[in-house]
Image (cartoon, one colour):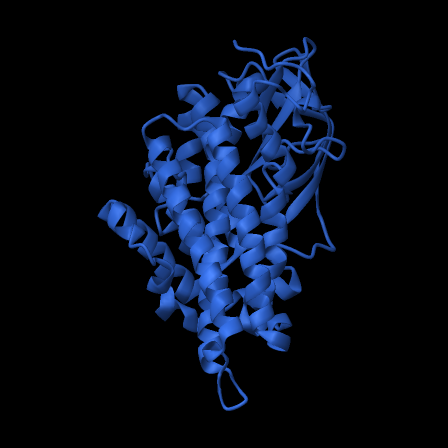
Length: 401
């Protein structure tokens, strides 16, 4: 079933936010939108239902020239933060699973290497990743450490001209198909480092997680590291502690706010199209007061999300975005999107649980987006620490260094 809502896309730009955006950035967004309409939306429900990754789309995705997001040089896209946000929103608008695949590869894996790798490491890995000849993954989350990522139990022990990794990771997007998996681990001194594990390395095992009720068309993996040896030159040269890892997370978190916006836009567009077409008691249900009020409130929330995401990304482009700003946007947009999508599903009535109408997939996928890269509650505490100077996470004042 085609996505009839594509023809209604301008309806979600009620305040003409596009007028604030550079035409070059809009061109990138529209290129991704056209690709998704032609290649993703027509097939994704079937892949989602079967919990199968649409691997045939990867070479086509490579031709879009968007891999790497804001990473500059080495063949990467080198786009603005605004354009990267628009791209993230378009992927989510079409499908959250493909958005996760792209986000992990471009924002987490490639950006980690760009920010924390040496020039030699960047040149060794980034060009092939930009061409998507090599797919990347980002291995931070562990079975016992989600929000408390700094606890990090995976170890890296120096052994001659290499390091031996031991530990476990969970919820690692692309982990089972990646050519390069960035594993975060602690050395003997307790310092956190990033270690690039290449496909086929002995001691590295990735098992696809099953039973998911969200983002079913992308594969997350549980990873086991048992005396997994990597050469010393695969340790990211500029990563010395967890603060360095946090740089990456801070720079990617704002794209999750855009993803929430994108899936909310799609939900609204689908609901609007459906209510105009669906007739009950002799007229389209869009003509009833209860429906119109719901649509109006959905549009109001989407408009506030658009303005927040746009402003946050302009601050990122100016080098002024802070971690707390990104957390505020992620917290706010994901919560609003969750409500918007629930209301949209309600407007579909019984049809809202059928995959053919797309809204059921969005309704499931928003639960993952709401949670990953920091839960709603953790984002609130990051903002709270910023505005009060007191850490409710640790019970201590934040260090000023």
